[in-house]
Amino acid sequence: MKPLIVYGVPFSQPVRAVLWLLLLKRMPFELVLTNPGSKGDTGSRNPAYLAKNPSGTIPCIEEPESGFTLGEAHAIMTYLARTNGWTDVYPDDERVRAKIDAYLHYHHRNIREASIGLVAPKIRKDLDIPELIQMSAKRNLTGALNTLERSYLADNKFLMGDSVTLADLAAYVEIGQLQPQFTNVFDLTPFPNVVRWLNDMTQVEGHDDVHVVLKELGDISETAPEMEAIKNANKQALRALKVKLATL
Ligand SMILES: N[C@@H](CCC(=O)N[C@@H](CS)C(=O)NCC(=O)O)C(=O)O
Image 1 (tube, helix red, strand yellow):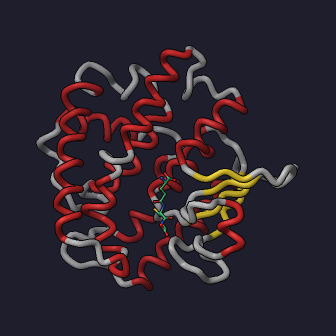
Image 2 (cartoon, helix red, strand yellow):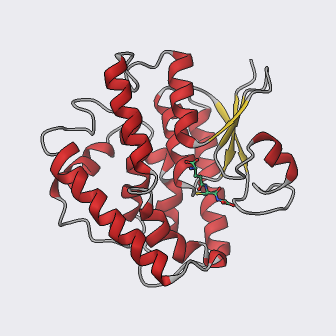
Image 3 (cartoon, rainbow, N blue to C red):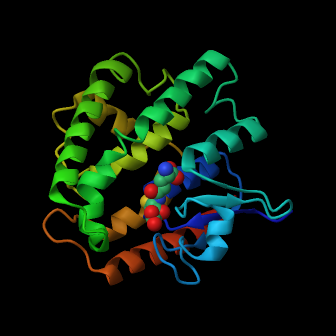
């Protein structure tokens, strides 16, 4: 059976969430490098790609046998969990599932703002994100981190309780990237429960494999990296993923 195809680059946060889930569940996949925002042959705004994912964003998956395609990281993750019976990360208790879904919806205009306000302005200079949008994103992120700190993680080891779910993977790829060992662009020390949770998440199978790209890129707090450095980090990460996939 041919492996599932994932379109994207390891630097993309939502792509990392999907790849992490696949590694955690030891499901083989092929990562087809797809450049976000590009109209070129391997770009996410190319007509051939838009036919697979009309929103023109990465990630997108394709099932090689049926040709079924699906975009949106959270839709992909819940689809894979449902169809493969991964009830450890997406329990089949409808109420627990609904709580996970609620976090996944909440995530988009809140925790996801980490990328819009702090990382994209350094990495995607072509987007020329206005200062006002960056400020508003940082404000939303701070509010959301407070919500995690005082509510989700106040009494729980992970967002939904004692074990890792899809919500944790989705949240970590955004918040985790900010840590000193990665981009180092935001001080997380005012959120001790979040910091404790981040440390626990580093122990989850697949963490190191999907974060090679950030290790490669290193601290970007002072100097924004050149496009060449980002491309190289993605390539290194792809190589590391191939080595990992050979062990599955
Ligand atoms: N809501 C989407 C967001 C995906 C997204 O924003 N992907 C970015 C890369 S991190 C992208 O493809 N940007 C290219 C573009 O918008 O043209 C998801 O969770 O999958």
